[in-house]
Length: 300
Image 1 (cartoon, rainbow, N blue to C red):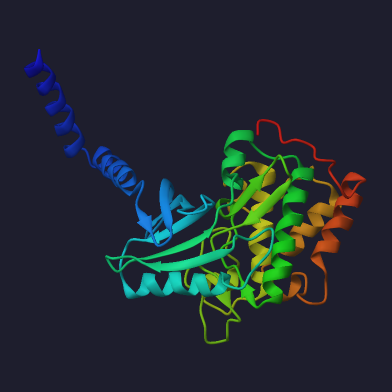
Image 2 (image 1 turned 30 degrees about the horizontal axis):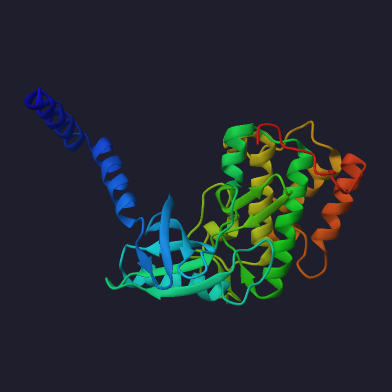
């Protein structure tokens, strides 16, 4: 019986090792399990929650207090990736706002890699919300937008441009009607005319970013407008065509059209228009109220 079981295990191992997809999944699972319990500075790794181009993101806890944190580990050691994580840390360092995670520290590990420790933000990303609930009611999109605009007002006043606003980078706490802007990996602090964006996400990035031009606060507005279209339509198909739903209340439609204008100067002018006040006016005109009264998102 034991030899039969061994043969089965060997066959399973052979299948896994010879199949690139299964091998990659196996390696990822091993790596995630190996990291659990690892100590990074004053923090203990608990669980892997995401994997990106140059590393992995984990939930963790402070060893003494047990307080939860998020740990972004830049496991791919290179000067370029290290510079990106250091700049992300610098962009976040002095930011303190309810709709933004706080930087707790940057730790150099024994192998030379870096890990950024941040406050942990529970909840689903907007992308995950759409996957579970489908396209959202316009009033839900409106309150999520208002929360993100509050974050914009704060970071832009501090000279920080997010540079990568998209459904994956907005965490929605549906029970509290809160939304948090995360992942400042492409953020820039007071970018000069000579400073180019480090990258972008297709469809959500504004034309000036894809051309390598200097980013402005209006660049984040564009990405938010495209994210609104994603949430209203339930996927990427209409985002790719920049297609705003034709049954949307006119004030909200006009608001989105201004955000996603190809011409930077046709978007709301930073410093001269208060978009937080404007979205409240849009909500009142579209839904006859400025508050959704904590209306639940079905399925969430």
